[in-house]
Length: 109
Picture 1 (spheres, rainbow, N blue to C red):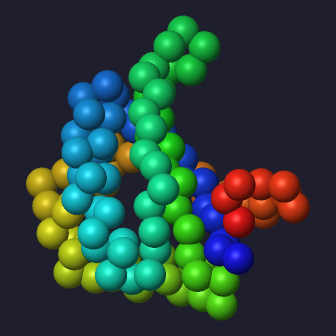
Picture 2 (picture 1 turned 180 degrees about the vertical axis):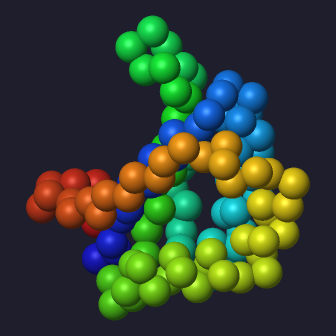
C-alpha cells in the first residue's frame, strides 16, 4: 500500500499561481526520480471567500519510504533547483502537508 500526501501551496497572487502551476509540471519527472509519484495537480483561483490562490498536489510514496526523507532528497536535488530557477520562493506564502490514510474501500490504496 502506498502512502499518499496532499500538498497545498498558498500563492501570493494569481500570476504566481500560473507560474507555479507551470513549475509543478516540471517537478513531476524529478519527483519520480526520487520515488515520489504525482497523481494530480489542481489549482484554485482566489475568490471572495479565499483571498489567496492555491495549488493542490496529490503525491504518493512507496510504503516503506520515509515521506520526509524522500521529500528532503528531492528538495535538495539539482532537478528541484533547475525547476525553481527564476521563481521567487517568497511567492509561496504557505505549504501545508497532510499524509492521507486510505479507508479499506478506497480505490487508491
